[in-house]
Length: 364
Image (cartoon, rainbow, N blue to C red; front, side, top):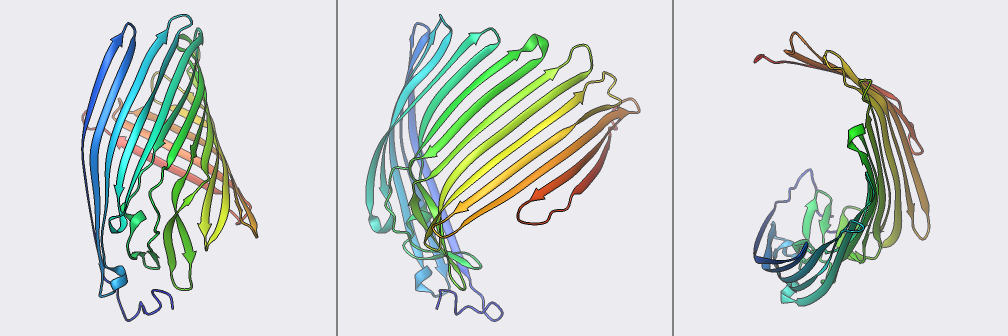
């Protein structure tokens, strides 16, 4: 007999009233000292926050909540920003110390302390060419839903049950590196960048599908990371009224999830690219941009007993025409796209999309 087994949607109704109140108050200070061309910065913060949840569901005691989650936070941060003239290098390094007191389920208390370092370095490798690298760590927070004392209905067929978790340090590490090559006098702008984000530990929802309802709660997981890269190139020609543009983004993400008490490893590979040429005719009566969009996504799901792979590819050639007429009183544009799909799971039909827009300006 699941929680909602008595509920007949044709003859009965549930009335849940939830009231959530939150408040935050804090004081912060900042001091800085000039050390020649360098700078030393000192920051402090003290704050308190509160979340209160009151919930009533008819006369069901298991859904009567009057919960509080309180947090007090103390932060001390030190940052040093400097410059090396030969070679030209800008750098910043520092750390932040966070000390938090958590008061949650049934007046339970937990204190956590963390040191969060950071640094960034940028350098001009040569004329028009520069590079950077950075690292940053952040402390993630909690919400009242993580520390429920009883159940709360989430939607028409699921509810959130108490998780009985204890606050732990959930830190995200972020790494970034990139290189930029720009020649403004030749209208050339390009860059390549990579980033990696990884959670040392994360509090995630878990799902347990019963016959009539889905039970949700929260559980700590160890795997949640994403690596991504981005490439851009833009060139506007001087002697002909055209420009060439290209950008591409790719990512690989890995996430651990829990479904029906079974842990699964989920990986997602995604790439999207766009290449197009754009016109810059001076009279503006007619301009265009035409090119192609490409997207490819691969999702892999692995558990102890099965493995599943889903693939989706989309190619989209497009052209947009736009211009003005009647002494610039009318602006118009025509957009056309042709979506070509290829999927491993479902049969897809290609789609042609054509749109027209016009605007009349009475003020001219």
